[in-house]
Length: 224
Figure 1 (cartoon, one colour):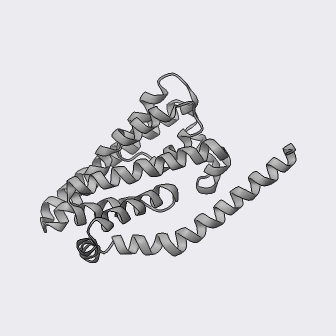
Figure 2 (cartoon, rainbow, N blue to C red; figure 1 turned 90 degrees about the vertical axis):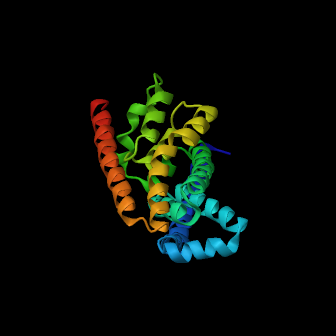
Figure 3 (tube, rainbow, N blue to C red; figure 1 turned 45 degrees about the horizontal axis):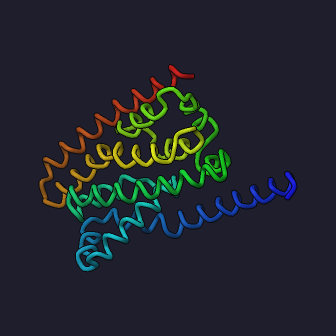
């Protein structure tokens, strides 16, 4: 296959992926967010679905990670409400880990063009400091660990770096637990009708996320 033919095939695949993501986001993503955003109905469905409900939720979580413009917070809060803080966190982390590994493989296969499906050039450029091999794994772990950072963008961008598959697997499986558990705890408190504690939990999460966002912006600016 000539270089020109390779470019045509690559462009065709990317366009097909854009179309696929757009259609899936519209016809599947919106209904899922709406469904998970109705905690009582979602918990009732989980209660009648048994183990299938857990498997289906993991699939929903994988979906929102791969289709980056589908927000993850409703799923995490819904998981806490329906499954409780512990199992909600476990299911979210499993889904996020599998989804992130799929993204990692896709980016390694198709490169930066895949990122441009979901993110602007400026957003992609803001993470170029991760191309530095020194302390790459440590910085990536910190960015995933800290609430408020753009984890969808980071998940896609990391595939462009020299980080190994094993390193990324460890990072995404461990470092994302704190940001997930803050949402599932809030959802669990809502499910237990402990509304004041839920408000406090979400308030603390919001403050931590703001701090995380400020830290991320400072790191990004200092490394430009």
